[in-house]
Amino acid sequence: MDEELHDIEDGKIGPTADSSLIGNIEETNEAKRLETLDEPVSTTILRDLNRIWVKMKHVLMPTSSERKLMDWDLWGPLFLCLSLSISMSWTAQENQAALVFATVFVLVWCGGGVVTLNAVLLGGTISFLQSICVLGYCLAPLNFASILCRIISNKYINVVLVGLAFAWSTKASVGFMAQLLPPERKMLGVYPVFLFYLTIGWMVLMQG
Image 1 (cartoon, rainbow, N blue to C red):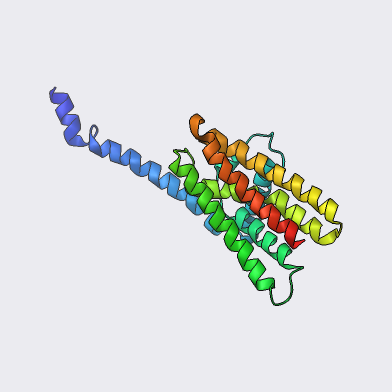
Image 2: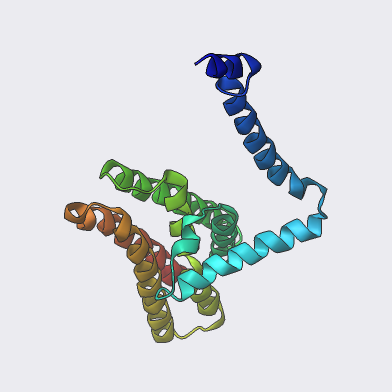
């Protein structure tokens, strides 16, 4: 007993040892976080582009593992939203190009926010930014369809392209988000996702 009291007084047992361990862990995490501060900007950009491409592959191939989408970021969704807005404003009249761009941009982010809020209120185990990330990356097929519709002027081919892109985007996003919703509320959470991509697909088709 006396030995234990002596160890406590010397700081070998008790809060001092624990705080030292915590301090070492915090220093290690801080060191890892600061490792990227000294790297070249080109290395940072290439690393971020690689992450975007990896996540996009998970969207373009929905049957593959979806764990990469759990590690959310907003660079990919921002890039896809901007490219969709730009491609849809190509064929707009000069005095309406800015309006089309702004409308698509706002619709994507506000619509994604509403869909995400609905999933959270239904008790989904997905964070707000994680859902925005998934919905944004799943715009990739509609992006490709929008670009092709500007190149191909055949109305029937455009309908097929947009239809396939809509189905692809919906399948990729629903397959991910349905896993994070309560079983009895999956339909309530998935239905707004369907409407979200249907609205964007319709705008791509009409603007084409």
